[in-house]
Length: 197
Image (cartoon, rainbow, N blue to C red; front, side, top):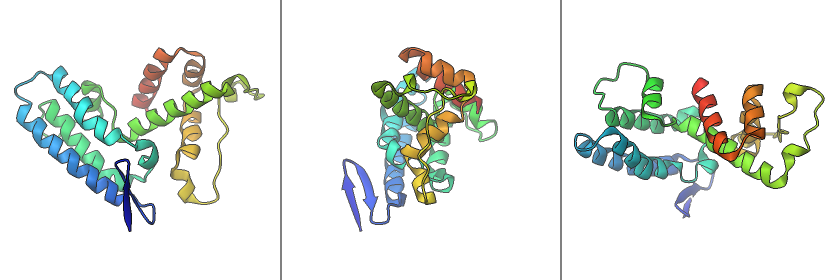
């Protein structure tokens, strides 16, 4: 039926409901702890605690399970929205969630997955010197990566397909800055692009 391997729960049908539910249990416990300490520490310290406890837990293995459909990730998104409001000490659910994320300086789970996929793709591209071999005829396609198309929609939820697809959807200037930029600047450019989406 299911197996836990390196902290990730796989079931026989490669559905991720069991893993997401297990992850939500851990994240709810962390949320409870943050509610208890939110009045005692400043926002910057809460952000550090968020990165250390919360994001490190849901980011683990996200390259494997992060390409899920939105309806499966919805519970995780709701939990993350809740903890961001807690850390910002906003009791009301009114207002823009995107503004809350920008104010706290973190990415929502879907954007975090896109950032990690792009960074993973660029790490392997730089290692293989693939970006030097790009010689497309049109300038705006010069920095695109080849997409490995799949026969089934199931294959479209994996990194091999989503990495190049997400990267190729970036505007030309962003792609050019990412490919030709230095490593320190890449994370900022990707972060900026994701918040403009």
